[in-house]
Amino acid sequence: MKLLYVLVFFGCFGIYAQNGIEKDFVEIESKLIEWRRYFHENPELSNREFKTAEKIAQHLKSLGLEVQTGIAHTGVVGILKGNQPGKVVALRADIDALPVTENNDLPFKSTKRSSFLDQETGVSHACGHDGHTAILMAVAEVMAKHKDKIKGTVKFIFQPAEEGAPPGEEGGAKLMIEEGVLENPKVDVIFGLHLRSMVEVGQLHYKPGGAMAAVERFVINVKGKQTHGASPWFGVDPIVISAKIIDGLQTIISRESKLINEAAVITVGKMTSGVRFNIIPESAELIGTVRTLDPDMKAMIIKRMTEMTETIAKAYGGEATISFTNQTGITYNDHDLVKQMLPSMVKVAGKSNVVQIKAETIGEDFSYFQEKIPGFYFYLGGMTKGETELHPHHTPSFFIDESGLLLGVRTLTQMTLDYLNQ
Image (tube, rainbow, N blue to C red; front, side, top):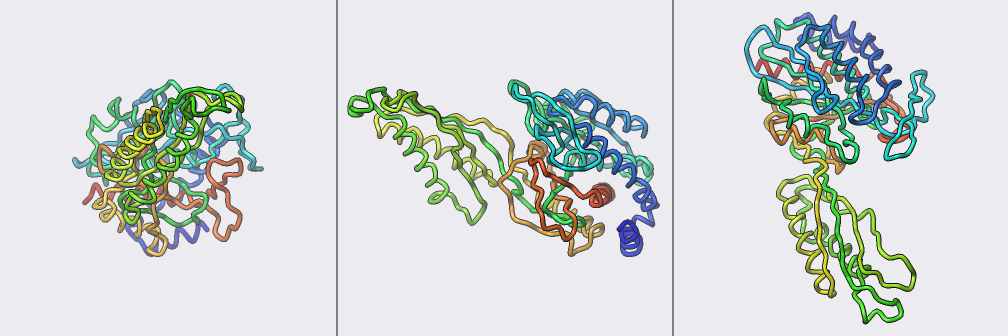
């Protein structure tokens, strides 16, 4: 497989050979896999990535980069200044793991244990962040050897807490931005990738515009009037009101949202009310999520949810309030930037392996970077070719084929050099 990659890239896309980088790619692969296995075997939860950050910082310092640590608690940034002036490209990798007990038989399987929400749990890289971190470390090493080819600056952002900061804490991309990660020097564009366990090795998947959803958490508090279950006419039933609200919210999606533009989802995931079978309670609480891929649709849906919640409750003699907490923004790939960078992706992976896909309603806090500057976030295949058994993300059986990692290094390097040279 490695020989085939060498022949394809060396023979068909001579840019690497001409620039003297191809040899570096071939040589970096063993380090790339070694780093990935280290992080996989030593995962750390969000805002607790202390040893992970230390290893990253040591590597970047060994390359002669300007290194900043302690950003958003455990974030690390490396700055590589080219020999010629130009724009600034940021490359981002997330570094945190999940409270998931791994169920693989890998020789570097995680056996780490920790506490999450006051419960003991296993910890593992069940979403591929170990691969992302190793890929960006490899990109930094390759590019540091070729400063003479860089017209501008590359900022390597190793971000903690993509999976969400622990309750009561801040973290992730939003906090990194607040602490100035996109300034000094000011970043022009940002690129990022995500390994996908259900996309074949060798493929790159992308979508212009809204690629992943904005995620809002909502809480609805319904107030009725408590009474005996045998005489409901003396009270106001918050459970009935809640049912009508849940039913009404779905019509916002099915009858008011222009779904030919983008998908949208409203889900009530939890409802709490009452203490006894024969008592109509005083109140009820609904908790759920809203997923949107278009800013105008998001604004409309939130407005209508607020109006509908309040008016339905009033119509049945009760009261209700709704509050929203933003979890992620829309992972929105700038159309012009995608168009500009697609030739770079094709150079590296081949036209048949660069695939435009539909949007997904999962969330990603890379979106916060894209709210500030143009960004391009894409998927890197991590599934063994011909594999029939799926190993989904965030599950104990999650699995990534390491032979796909080097394509991530090549792609980010090619995109960065092309953008800066253009």
